[in-house]
Amino acid sequence: MTQPLVTILDDEPQIRAMLSDALEDAGFRTASFARATEFEAALRRTTPDVCLVDLGLPDRDGLAVVHRLALESGAAIIIISGRAQVQDRVTGLELGADDYIIKPFDPAEVVARVRARLRAPKTPDRAHSTARFNGWTAQFDSYILTAEDGTDTPFSHAEGEVLRLFLEAPKRLISRQQMQESLGGGAGDSFDRAMDVRISRLRTKLREDPKNPRLIKTIYGAGYIFLGDVSWS
Image 1 (cartoon, one colour):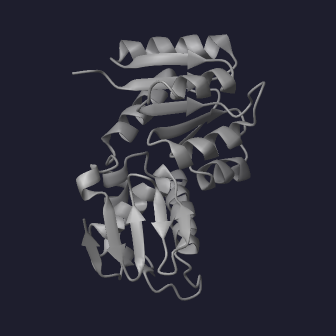
Image 2 (cartoon, rainbow, N blue to C red):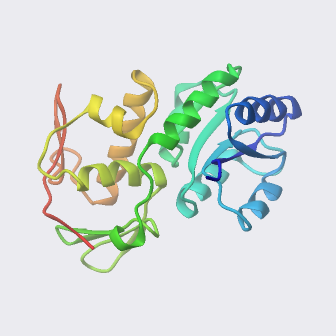
């Protein structure tokens, strides 16, 4: 069986070498890049399983790279950055990252986070990649939400994980703990914040009233319930 491929985009050679060594010792294949242009050229030839992306790149805004990856790639995205402000983490998650690790870090933590992302549900096969609910169509192979009026809205890999979790268990309570177990990632405030961001963005894309959402209901202190009628094809 081919080992998962992890790409590393960071302009610091010491960071690239440290991460490559740790990940390869853990059984992963790696490919490292110092510039976004080299990284994006490689993506046209191969599809990684996980992308580690630094935000401070010499030739491109790292957040723009993350956003494009989230829209166009099925890979999991983990930001590795020295930017430690809460707003930086929130912005990264809002743009489609699955996780955010602050420098300096222990390479063992990065390996553990990569493994957690790979345990999370993957995008389904094309035969089971389209869900219809309440006038909406979600296409998980192309990351597109189509409204009843025909308007298309892209969603990210991270948002798709949460949406699929809801669509596979409609009208059933999904607790925060169940979400953490299903989607991977560390428990705690950072995971809760990541889920809040993804659910907020999904509600916006589904044209929900934030004060009275019809489809994704918050059950305070318990979790969430998706109230749509869902069919898969």
